Image (cartoon, rainbow, N blue to C red; front, side, top):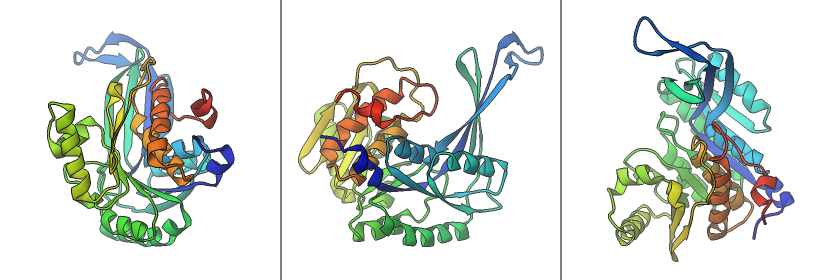
Amino acid sequence: MHPSLQQLAAARVLVVGDVMLDRYWYGPVDRISPEAPVPVVRVTRQEERLGGASNVAYNIVSVGAQASLLTVVGDDEASHQLEALVAKTGIKTHFGRDAQLKTTVKLRVIGRQQQLLRLDFENTPEKEVLASQTAAFGELYTQHDAILFSDYGKGGLAHIALMIEQARAAGKPVLIDPKGADYSRYQNATVITPNRAELEHVIGTWHSETELNDKAHQLRRSLGLQALLLTRSEEGMTLFDEQGQLHVPALAREVFDVTGAGDTVIATLAAMTAAGIPLRQAVPIANQAGGIVVGKFGTATVTYDELFAQS
């Protein structure tokens, strides 16, 4: 079962979290630098894409649902570039500006079809701006069918516990892409979607599926979550919920680039949830979306037609 295009078009997701600008510099590598044993890239092309929570929101609109984006950015060149890119997508923006903040930029230098270097520009937002973001959230969450928190650990979600509490009290499903080793801030969310490395940070390593099941369910119960979705790259994904486990194997296709695959998975899950699709039916659809996007280069998105072409 999957939603019609009309059902998805009416589904509204509020994305809250850390945005970033993904910048790519491409060029040929013809020689090694005389100054140090490093390649010299002669930059011939530049490209900018939405990153972080803005890529998550872009994935939601690409699949056919509506997305609003609540975030904090600087008042710098990168923030205006990001705003211009977001404006082209149809995402509704609610940008809090902090003049002291450096908008997060991830600059990747690509030579000979591979990433040679990544440079990150970032710092942490001021508390007052985050407080105003929480006030804006209070006005926005009631107008949406699902709330998605995209946590990249950049400091933009300092008040997440309060926001989750408000949304859940109103009966809104809350989906979280988590970060860090302390998940207590995600208490009572509907579902969190850690990858293998992120979950190991929190519950330690596991040596069997039985041990993983025990530890995952223990974490789910201790946090008061309805479900935990573990994304496992080539092993597919496993949903742990009150009914037990649901495992969906990875789709056998060529993996070109895993950048942003997690964004696509949670965005698709949120869009389906907002359209009224139960989690157990939404997970295989999100898995399908992740399988399509790893066949594309860079942070990428999936369309409704790509996703349901086989259905």
